[in-house]
Image (cartoon, rainbow, N blue to C red; front, side, top):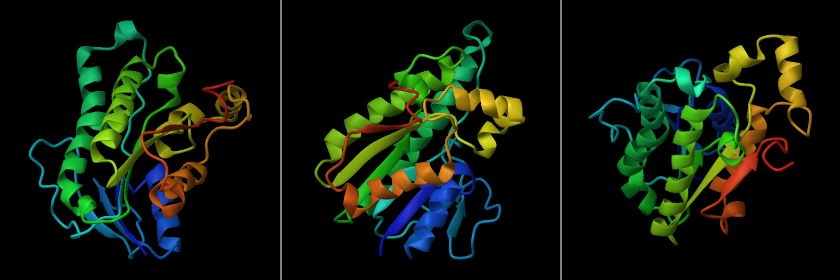
Amino acid sequence: MATYLIVGGSSGIGRALVDQLLQANHTVHVWARQARDLPPAVHFTAVDVTAEGADMGTGLPDTLDGLVYCPGNIDLKSFRSLKPDAFRQSFELNVVGAVRCLQAAERALKRSDRASVVLFSTVAVQRGMPFHAAVAAAKGAVEGLTRSLAAEYAPSIRVNAIAPSLTDTPLAGKLLASDDKREASAKRHPLNRVGDPADIAAMAVFLLGNQGRFVTGQVIGMDGGLGAI
């Protein structure tokens, strides 16, 4: 069994991942702002990844076999209406937050003989989409970080990213708030549905485990074909 840290594991894709890892009898640590209804087996630490100077070493095990960074945002506005602060905030959450967590966990990851890191991008980087400028810019940086760290950490730590499309999580609640909105979003996907958190989490499980041991430096689209067809 392995020991994993899931940042942002109290909601959405992160929570689905926590459930799947626990079902496989792994040890799971979660960093998030709130524990919400996490299972008792989870080792929870309250962490704000955007807080400058936050003590992120608290509660870390000596050895980590994997880290998954799940925090993200959806700020869909026209480029004209976006203030520079919107870009800064998106970059701070998606990129700098990941950097803080990875630097805090680096020693623990290096003590493992099978360490794996999974970050999250978005289909909006691969496929240009209107009103996605802030998040696409930040997640594009995540993809660059993924490849750079994969090269730097090889062969000891694998680093990959998953790029989902719209997924049925609380973060996307307003975009899927009615049957009409859900149907319209589904129709934009060749597979005619939006993402399921459990499906995305299953890919993260694959990348964390031994089955993904020959995969690094990849950005894997999980978008119902939206990014390629």
